[in-house]
Structures are given as structure tokens and as C-alpha cells.
Amino acid sequence: MNTLRNKVQLIGNLGNDPEIITLEDGKKLAKFSIATNETYKNAQGEKIENVFWHNLVAWNKVAELAEKYLVKGKEIAIEGKLTNRSYETKEGEKRYVTEVVVNDLLMLGK
Image 1 (cartoon, rainbow, N blue to C red):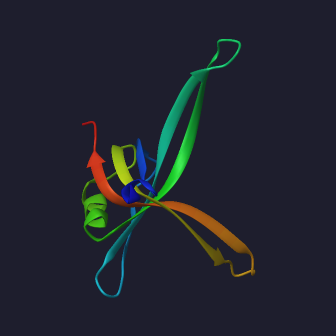
Image 2 (image 1 turned 60 degrees about the vertical axis):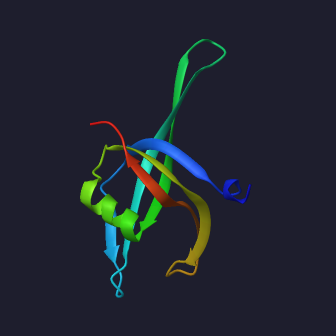
């Protein structure tokens, strides 16, 4: 059951090309986002579609795959874990970020 404690699975489309960062030790980091859609009918029978954006980060081999194959609009499936972090802006404001750290990546579609 421990593997189910913090597990995220999403299927969506890339909102942008991955941002690739190569660290001093040669490790790679990929940052990108995907959009997922939810469709339902409201009480009046109208079709409602919500779009949710998810920030993703990938390291090492997964980051290399993202760099090589992922482009804006590509449909992908990911599995990872939800993380939270905070940082302080130059103005001294504290900001909070929620991201999915991607462990597995599957390219879908064409």
C-alpha cells in the first residue's frame, strides 16, 4: 500500500515545449505543463468543459526523453508523485508551487 500513498496519473496535452535545464553535474531537468479536460452536463443540460493545468518536472532519463520527443500539443500519459515547494521572490513575497515529479512517461497519439 505504500506505493499508493502519493501517486498521480494524468493523460493530457502539452501546453508548451519542455524547458530543459542541464545542471553542473550533467543531470537534466525538464519542466513542462499539460492540460487535462473534464466534460459534464449542468442542471440545464448544457455541456460544460473545464480545463485544468498541471506543472510537471522530470529528471535524468525521463527529462532526456522529454527533450528528445515532446513538443507543444503532444498527448502524453504520466505517472509520478505530487510535491509542494515554496520560494521567496526578490520582493520578499513567499510563493508556493505544486508540481508533479514524473517517474514514467508514455507518448500517446501519432
